[in-house]
Length: 255
Image (cartoon, rainbow, N blue to C red; front, side, top):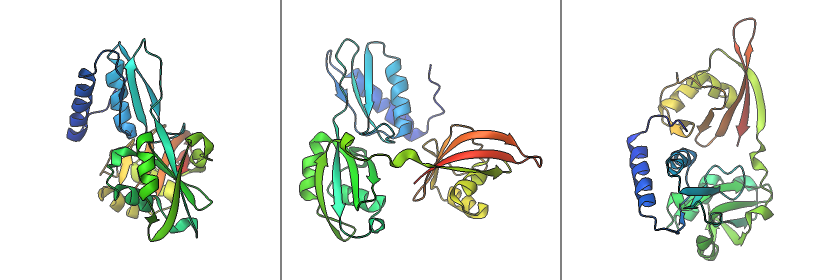
């Protein structure tokens, strides 16, 4: 059985709403969700697994997607994937002129909620892909004409036609005095430990997609740590100690 870490009040409310949604499923029907963050996906999967008559598929547009939609259906029914497509956004100029925040803000300004938008992946060729449900793509393509002051052109494509290899990440090796969050973040992002402490206390750090505000949180192999605006780290492996007692660490950094 999947073990779920303690719930916050917001997570408990989300879980109750999700359970009510399943309670109101009619026999033979299929239920699709909006895009779930990894913590919500963890909660949803645990709930569905307690209902032997139901099964589900997960899809966010590509295998490494962080935000995914669920399609939930009776076990005897043929499996279908959530209807996720990609809106490709192209612009002229330097790719660094537009950020993830710019693109997300422009889509939300069209009237969408955050959970109606999946991953946003920026490519090298002055373009990006925004994962959305099929029925939202036409509206976005027709109305998204400018992002961050730059004119853009949009089209929708099947996600498997895009060069979605951004999530390969890069390896970082080093040593830390301990597996405290501030020490690991300092190594992974190349920021002074004192600065990391301020960032953690400022509420911009998440461990396994849950907000933390204590620099002393202990990490372990397999944990994912994100720093808002800087990217995400995976604690790939803990590789023993040096002669001076420092911990050898291998991280994978995702931009």
